[in-house]
Amino acid sequence: AYMTSFDSDFPGSERTYSVLQQVESESLSIPDMPIVGQPVAEHLRAAFPELEHVVRSSWPQTLDVTSDGSTQSLRGRFVSDDFFAMFPMAMLRGIPAGTALPPDSVAISEAAALRRFGTIDVIGRRMLLWHRFEVAIAGVWQTPESPNHIDSALPLLRSDLVGPIELYDRWDDQDNAATYEDPTVDQWNDTSYLAYIQFPPGPVDLAGFQERLDHFSETTVPSNHDYRRSY
Image 1: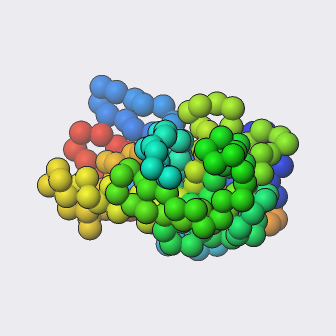
Image 2 (image 1 turned 90 degrees about the horizontal axis):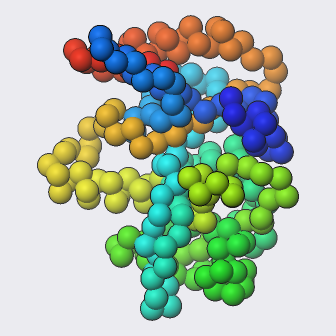
């Protein structure tokens, strides 16, 4: 997994993996990519209870963020509760490292806080995301000394903000309702997510886990006449 080198400063990085998806049909084969459907992480958590952490994350995206009467673009991602337990960014203000975000809150990078507010003393400041959802800043993470995929120099990966996945789901549900999709149904074709897994301490049997993951793909992922999706 790429995290073995890119995120090596996080504890347990040697046990942490990004789940890859492959799509095959009679005429097409899409190679392994770190993109998965909306319900994959939840089903992995149920199918593999021995995993220490399972995280669903949206891909980082550009957000319209309004505060103090002005709107700026920041890069943000939305994550399930175990994200900061798996990737414990050092916190300069607010929530302790490794702690899940409270509802309707975000953590902000040190660089983004200084760029947007001129200070890192921003806990409790209110912001509006997507011109719809009001959130409070609950944490400010320190710029890491070593590269990682959260506070990255690569624009595709960089996150200025991290929020709870429930915020993203609320935004996504509104969009699904507008396009007549049922937001209460698992959206396997909505492949705008990442799924991370972390094994418990000790030896990791990757070959054995892949066999079980193949069985998961065959028995849990809905079948489709046009293509086959596996992990």
